[in-house]
Image (cartoon, rainbow, N blue to C red; front, side):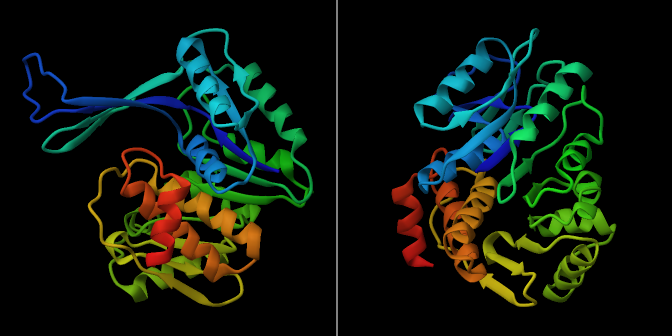
Length: 300
């Protein structure tokens, strides 16, 4: 089983305007709602690729009910902790001349409720995969991911961490199967500008020395490169189509890589499928459909 963890899931409210003017009433030209959160996005793309997963995390209030309903409608299993107070957050994605975001804080998570989540991870068994994705809410301690991975210690579990800065680095001692920084995130981790292929490779290999088995570095318009645990380097390009949406593209790449590797144990294929999923979401209003993914896959 593949488990995805989203500590602070959301409903993403996407608002389209011809122009946004501060201080007046603006009228939308279109709007959409999507269930969101990095782990949830991974589960949604896995479902498009025919793989089952279980979404873990916290939900609260009427928005939490909507998130759970949205997953159920996609036949995605969830096993959330229902919080007694507050509501799952609503994130506003404003698309006018420029893209802007307003992200909510989310509900309070008590130490007792976090312990309930830790107990849920006892269901993760040898041979399973767990995806820890996204930031940690302010009401949870900074070592939340480490506590989860400590709980899994001794089990043969494939660990995937999609996080940034110290949160990612602190997880490397658990030898995650996959991490996916971009060049900006590498620059933040190593406190120096990472621009060239040589600098990218040096940083990725340093992360491998610290424990990461496979490192995908997304290069934006230049595609992605995988530094794999077999010692090889794999590259994948991009397809040129108009970008409609940047939210969830990286999560889609993670899901595609998981699916590709689960199906073939081939790093090159996994990277290509991951890249197709990331591109397909970028070219879609929301997360990519199966049809769009394989349309892009054939073009890569």
